[in-house]
Structures are given as C-alpha cells and as structure tokens.
Length: 67
Image (tube, rainbow, N blue to C red):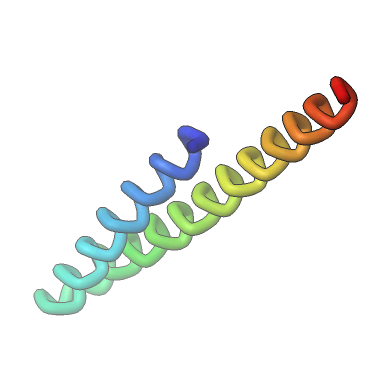
C-alpha cells in the first residue's frame, strides 16, 4: 500500500471530524477547512491508488517477461 493512501485516509478522517465539529459549533471557518482537508485526503488516496496500480502493472510485465 502506498504511503499516499495512508496519508489520504488520515486527512479524510481528520477533515471529516473538523467539518462536523465546525458544523455543530456554527464555526464556518473550521467547517470549510475540514472540508478542504477531506478533499485533499481523497485526492491523496487517489494518487496512492494510481501509484499502486502502476507498480502492480510493472510487476506483472516483469513477471510475464521472465516466462
């Protein structure tokens, strides 16, 4: 698993928590920052998935070439 996926999952979780706290307290600034962090986490997770897929594809090509 790529480190971007882990960092993305953490950012999504923390961002979601901030967004909910901001919403509950009526703090728009915290709510918006949380939403931004949550989106950042989703992007990081996507980048990590792409890196994993590229690494897996490269491994598969290498294994096929050995045969």
